[in-house]
Length: 181
Image (cartoon, rainbow, N blue to C red; front, side, top):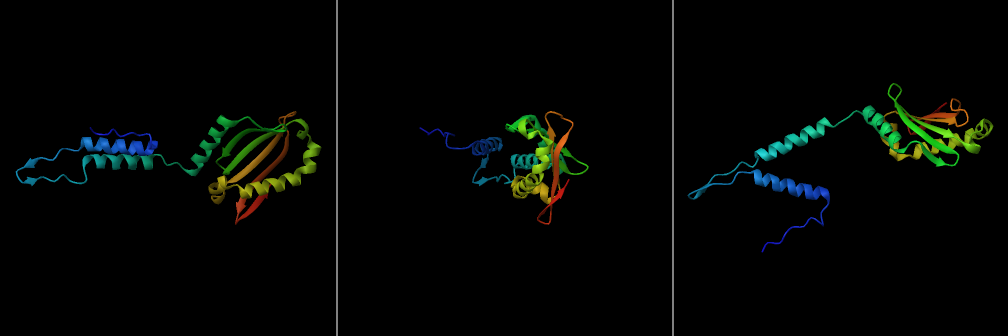
């Protein structure tokens, strides 16, 4: 009695590959025996050609420009995560991408005791230094930084949403962070 093959040990990709190979074996025509001579089946069968065609079209059809990818990631991140309270005094409201300037914009709101213009002005240099350091060490943004994309951080007041309490735009230039106000 043949032992049944279980898929418990395999991950989904291995299971799919095994099922795909099994499917192609079923599609392949059987060899016919004519006396002592067997006809050879070409090694490049219809199933292999179909698989190559499908893989090629999937690989080229799904490529997006970096701008499209960045815009999509910003929309998805905002839809899934925002608004998000970072702590009792700060909330992330949204993330957007400006195509014309290649700038990824992060919008925050200061609330509670942090929603004070005098306090923000007093601590602006410390905030700037901390943000520059965090930006320089952020490896998740490496591709965007290498391509010259900017990151803008805009902090609004909760009491007066039209008021911008602090803003900073950062970009990389020859392994140094360039700061724009």
